[in-house]
Length: 192
Figure (cartoon, one colour):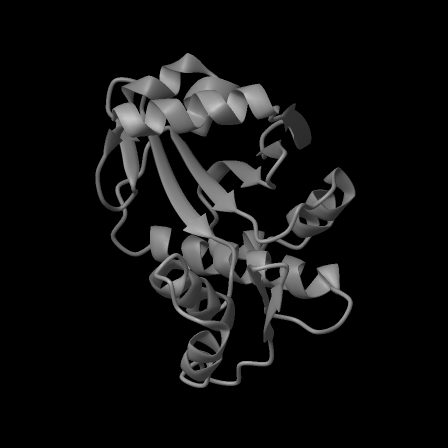
């Protein structure tokens, strides 16, 4: 959806599939989608998705966090709102960059084992942190190209920007995602 609106309307042609997630024979594009998070982050996110908005008290939510392996976060109540903090300290962006890089390298291994290949094999990464362009440059420099990497384009969705790394051009384009574009994406997602 975001590629169709923010990058090129040709992505409207993509059909949901498997191995890769989105495909277009007509355009000869395959697009795999991944969340750039580790298992712990995934567990925290699943916890949020499953439990928030269900009228549970702070104490009930705290009890449920005990089920998350190695949970080190905190649940607070402030002015009637529940706040979920999965880290109690300053954030080290290297941790998040490593998570994203790990997921990219896993996808490189997977695409070489039974995925349908296209003229353009693309990877869309939902990043867990609002990275800056220099962060994306650092990630791109450390992508393992020794593993027969067939991905030609990488999209890094970083909340208010999408960074597009085109491997053949060796350049990163920054696509600003305004509030207006976000509203348009949400509206379209409800229509489909």
